[in-house]
Amino acid sequence: MRTQWMLQLQERLWGLAPWDAQKISDEWFRAHFHYAADVVNHWVGSVVDMPHAKLFNFGCGDGITDLSLVLRHGATRIHGVDIRQEYAKLPRIAREQLGMSRIPSALTFETILPGTPLAGRHSNFDAIMSWSTFEHVQRDQLAPILRDLHGCLRSGGYFFIQIEPLFYSPFGSHLRRYDDKPWHHLLASEDELWGVVQSHEGPIDAAEVDFGFADFGVDGYKRFVFKEYLALNRLTSDELVELAVAAGFSVARQERRNVEMEVPSALRDRYPQEWLLNNEIFLLLRKE
Image 1 (tube, rainbow, N blue to C red):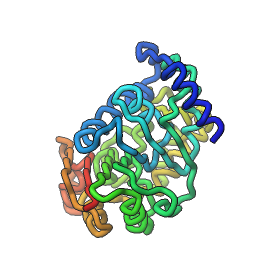
Image 2 (cartoon, rainbow, N blue to C red; image 1 turned 90 degrees about the vertical axis):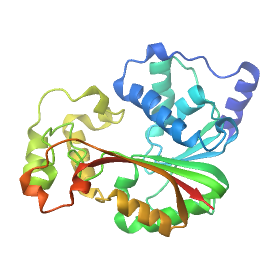
Image 3 (tube, one colour; image 1 turned 180 degrees about the vertical axis):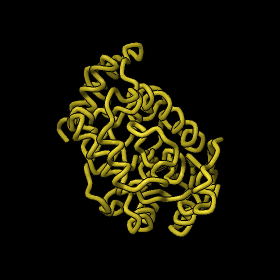
Image 4 (cartoon, helix red, strand yellow; image 1 turned 30 degrees about the vertical axis):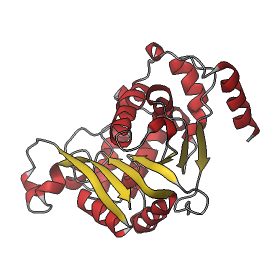
């Protein structure tokens, strides 16, 4: 609390710390600072007044998108929660990528345990956002978490959810860093997939290397990513919408993005084509 108070005092005296987007050199940072933040602003900023809204980020990760919403889109209050503490790196990342001496006091973060009830401590938010998080939630926790987040919103508030890639889409395994074969996770065994990941050599696409990579090392990161793959809940767009409505939300707007690829013959009779081609969903929910 003292640190937050000091940040607020500094900003009252000198304003936000200067920053320069021309300094950005990291592709992961660039994608989340520009693309992800612009998408969130497009969906959330169209229904709430960003400079005056109280915002909540469920699965905030490293906080880069939140930082951009403050610096580039005028947000003044964002509280982010996550089960990991990647956001603790944000002051260093902001210094390296933007030349910022301190992050804005508008940002606060919190570490939670999976399934931790939030509505009792956090309420009356104008909007909640969640970027590529819900595919990682344990399936039996999806309904209670959505009900809990419903309780975190004020009446008339909005909840924006994005998921990409969806599990049954060509690269829904989240293993594309190491395996570039479409739908390979639906065609190969877990042992075969792990073999592909384990034997991968050479660089990874820079846009896929997050700031946690250095914490694990090359082999450790492979194990981490594969463990994440095994834990995916295999949620489809239809299931997400059904669960959200059952939790009390109404659907204000949605967009589903599909890929244009030839589905392997071995999968055509095993899964609906809609599942196989639906790569991403943008879902805007409302609490009546």
